[in-house]
Image (cartoon, rainbow, N blue to C red):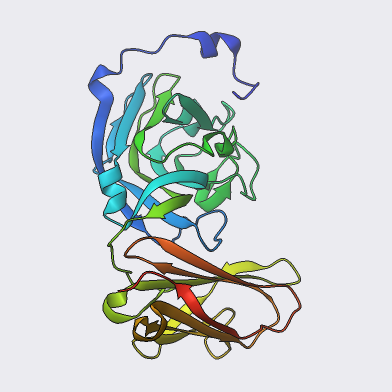
Length: 320
């Protein structure tokens, strides 16, 4: 929705051709992370946080014209971080730009046939930059001026319009300059997408702050998520102890919450085994993925219930 304080004549005024100010299919970097300064909206276990960065997107915003920048995310990009067939659950979008009069601008993000207006400030907005994370969970109201200091800002239109669509495809940022006499520069943009993906068969686990990689060849990916009785949510931080064993902490690194090991029992019952124990009564979800074929086992501990021991000797029928 466009800000009502903009004049109707301005909204209907045609923009000049943008043929000379577009960046078609710029380079893109796709990474997989649990924690980023653009965070996934819901860090729930079982989802993948995919961070997409437009590389080489520093470009001038022409006066009384629009800058159009497009990137393409491919299945090959996703397979490079060990996943495929990713569906969007939610996303946050970070933008940095400088402009001599931000009130002239209107910013939108498009994916496929869906376009979402991110920022359409009042014409009186005399800020000279935008440095914000657009999120449906933002604490600042839509079109707040100024939007600086990495503020978490609700978009003009909900980004949830993109939920349920596939991550692959073209993504287009459009910055329209609606009035004369002022110019600026896009300094960079990226977004973090909370997704549900299929693990790529045969891709070994990659250790990370919130991921334990257990078993020979880092075959098993182990993650945890939690929710306290007060509604605080998060993901556990993993610490490897041996090739097969590690533990997770939730609140600080001196407070161990769960210990887990994955053992090769193929020579005994043709199964891989999962053993775990918890030192907590908060709601906990433990997810173990066999990265060789994408098989997943989930273990759940209810809220305000002492974590019950897990001794699953039939966990993965995926030998050898």
